[in-house]
Length: 75
Image (cartoon, helix red, strand yellow):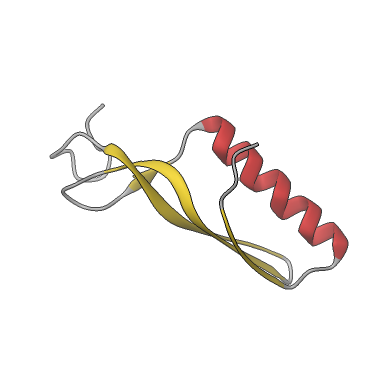
């Protein structure tokens, strides 16, 4: 897969930081597994990782959290 942003390189296994905002909640997750483009730095997460992150954000928003910073833990 060639990077869809820069179209110059093949993304490689790595990790990234994801920030999600919903209502009053800001969720920051470090060390999220991703494929990262060595040319432009764009990161791509797979579908199961994205679903897990969105579920976590939903649970935190429902609980009334406003800010949460955590390291990624695989389900």
